[in-house]
Length: 488
Image (cartoon, rainbow, N blue to C red; front, side, top):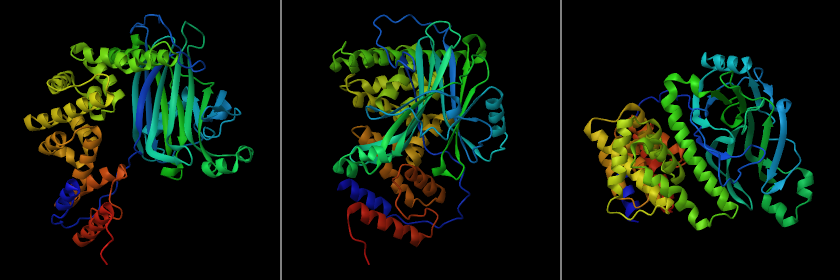
């Protein structure tokens, strides 16, 4: 009640005049991306190995995943995926279905000159506007599969089953020994699909009512095409009609040998270290699921060693990428990926300082995540007060905190008044709501856009409307927030 009252009081400030709305920038839908690894192939899945073969950075391949959002996705450049498919596996829950792709039917694939030409034309703007949507750098050792996945933040409600998210992933596997087919690639698509008449007939009356004739389906499509080492990329295109009549995503996989990297050797070293940590985590999990390790020891084993290595400078980046990625500390993960070495060391120092005098259990993922994220925002606030954040770090803070990320004092207060990641996320939403009554139109627009992308913006509110329109819109939203009937 006190928080609601404070929010109402903040929103009661005077509203400023309006200006003409600028043309909206071309932006991709918000995507959440992740790069993971496991020992095993696409066909075998994760394999528990008690004594895995040692891996070397010199033999590890550089893997680069690039995803672009395209205004007018071309169809003629690439070949339909069904024509270049080696194997299809379809699953609904634990049930395997007939090997016919539905979700991936509209996808297209290409290698060599077709993939290269498509990328060149996109860069030249021949297919309309293009915006970067996701990116990942990895290191692929022998006998390992890398999985680059992107998912939409919107939750889909599945009647009778709960919620799920749309997800697309690319799996790239490397043979355990030198072979003619060194690499293999699979496209994985998860989305809602309609039950066919045969499947509906197999359900009872109550099951049919609960399903709503729509279920979550997962498809694994093993492709005939594959990228070549130090050669042409592999390209995929996927339509996304929900974001435009012919909009969609273009995806590329580039593979390079370590000897060809030259100036990118340091990035490759960081990617290899992150891959090794992820393989340790995945190996422990696979063993646990196989019954070789008590489940209660799983998280302690995988997090404990990494957390202890955090104090060693050469493990700063890889350890933070692993810890932040596995505990939901999103700003901390961005800092680990883009910060320069000196800034990263200063951030790690903040983490260590924040952990002193506090009981932080390495077996508590939420506690570790809040320690990393709290430290990330305090570090950012201190740099803002001292000599300013570099552009890329400032962009990370604004992306995660919205208009609230422009004030060092506001960030420090939000951290001090929050007990965990969940409460901190709620506080950022409240602070951006308060920014909707800022005297500066630009501040209102930034706060509104940040809230809108997260589904938290007040319905019907126009940040560039007249003062009276904005006041009325916010009052209606506040009445709905507090469960009050609107005043007639």
